Image (cartoon, rainbow, N blue to C red; front, side, top):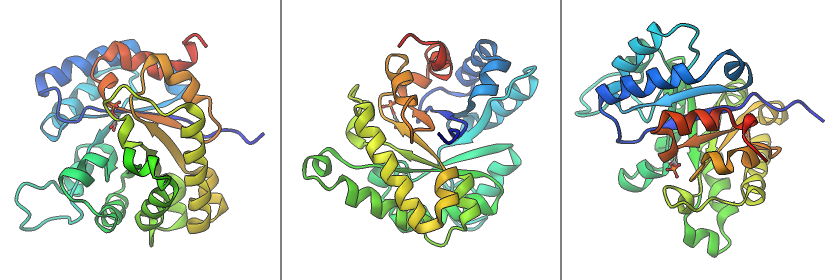
Length: 262
Ligand code: 13P
C-alpha cells in the first residue's frame, strides 16, 4: 500500500477569540503538543486577522513549537482600493503559511464564486503560501443526489490554471455544509467516498502525481470522539476543525488522535 500523506490538522477559529484570548489559547496548545505530535502531524491555527500578529509573536516565543500560522481568507490583489480587505502580501510578512480559501461561509455570506476562489488560490501561491481550498455540498444537494456534481465543479473550477506542482503541494478541504457546526458528521465512509472522488477529479485536472500528493482534509463537526475513525480513511489526510479548535484541550486531543481509543 502506498504511504499515506502527512496529515494536516487545522483549527479554523472563525470569528472567535480576541487577540488576548488568542495568546492564551496558543500558549496552552504549544504546551500540550510536543515533538512526537509534530513528527506525526502538521498543525495550523487560523485566528481572525486582528489576532495574527499576536499569535505570530507568541508562536515565535514558544520553544520547539511547530504550530503553523494560518489565515481564514485574503484578497486576490496585492494592493489597491479595496476597503476592508487584507492583502496576501501582508499575510506572508506575518509568517502565515496556510490560507483558507472559499470556505462555505464565505461562499454563502460573501458571495464568493468558484472563479473568485480560483483567483484567490493563485494569489496565495503567488505570495509563497499554501491554500486550503474548501468545497462541499448543502443538505438539499446531498438529498437531491447532486453532491458529486457540485463538488466536481468546485474542484475543477477552483484548480483551473493552477500548475500541477502547486496542486500537489496544496490542501483541499471537503466540508459538507450540513455537517458544519451542527454536530452531524458525515459517516467516515461517506466522507471517504467524496474525498476519493475529489482525488480522482484532481487527477483528471492536474495529473496522477499531483492527485497522489494533494492533501484532502475533512471538516464538519470533527471532535475527539470521531477524529480517529475519520483520519483512518484512505483518502482523508487531515481535518479542518471549527468549534472544537477553540478549546486547546479538545484541539490537542484531535491532533493526538492516534492516542485516542478506537
Ligand atoms: P465545525 O467543526 O464547527 O463543524 O466547523 C467546521 C468548519 O467549518 C471548519 O472550517
